[in-house]
Length: 520
Image 1 (cartoon, rainbow, N blue to C red):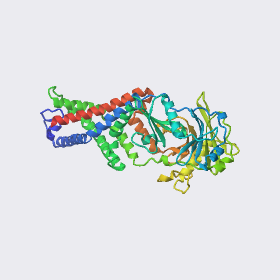
Image 2: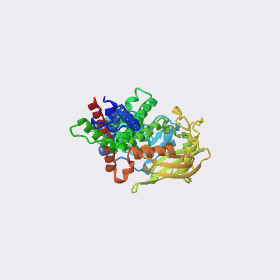
Image 3: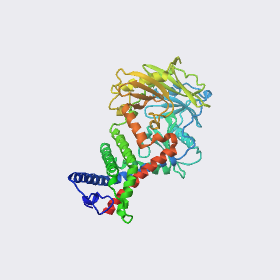
Image 4: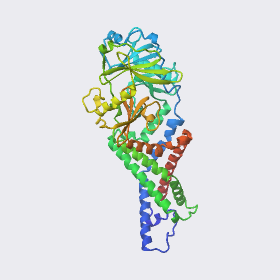
């Protein structure tokens, strides 16, 4: 280690910085030496975490954009319901198969035929709409049919089909949907497709290359390796400590290399140690702001993870008895793309989705179970009920939420006024792709936190709850960490700038290490 008197030269010169010394200048010099020393010490402490975060951050655009695998269809397009194929009423089919109570029903049509997709407590079963006979392993067969359609591959052998009930290292919580089927294809790219049969949609897909990217990102950016040896709180605390130190390192570097710029003398080319310092200083000044914003937004993001995301626990799934359904007839299925059941305030409804297969536009209406009388603004009415139901989720209401793992708290809306409601059919703004569920009903309330709910009425689930604190953190992460402010220039420009910024931070870290090693 060089002594403090030498360390303030920065460029390795042997003459002192000042010829005429005064007590004031000595005090200033001592303070500058301390700042520089702390900058160096902090830089060494955060060197490895910084390399981890920046190197894995550089991988993210490759994983999510440039080298993201392409598949034929990212949206599953179900075949239209053939009205002439529905020859039996639902209740008749249920009684024929000894089923007294169900959670819901849908109509699905794929190469195996037309079926009532019946959801029970723990399983999904398929019964022919023609003769009521059950399709053996129906959910598995439907999952395989969906997966083959999505990647347009009807020939490759199947390595395995597994139903996923919980999130794991390959199928992360960010995918939101459960349960799903994982269909693994025996192909050169080792493609895995995850599908949710209960709503006929894809959850995600990964080939071998993407699996490697995900492992790198989860290990070195999210520090998943700590989750197996520490509690999540400790894991987050360690990350927050390092992110705080990186912020301090960036600020101290800006202070000593920016505000003290005039104190640097020219460096002889023969002075290799001085040249390293010069390059470290110049590049450090160039990337100090992005270093600080990367770390600060990451720090802000990490602090929000202490509050568990419990959205999956909020679900309304009432039961329907076969005796009740026996009194009802199926509604007119002409132009209907799907059919399900909904129930609230003691009333039962058919939830009917109609689609225009040419324009790909759809509409949803609710018909009273027995009379088929339409309910005005049915989606909004159901969404309003769901919010009120979830607001009392600590009650003993059996269909209020996932009672096997009940949320720690419901939502306190008191007498909040509903400001607006809308059906959201695409990801945008505060309801981004990370939420996975569409379409949803948006309900915005007049509360101090501007509480907004997004409800997936097709499943009776809470898709997202957003308050001002979420918006602030989301904006910070989107603009300072992911550079979404550059979206207008296209993804290539945005990801290119983000990659160069991360590469700059990585380079300055390596220069700092080289300076330290030269000083030894």
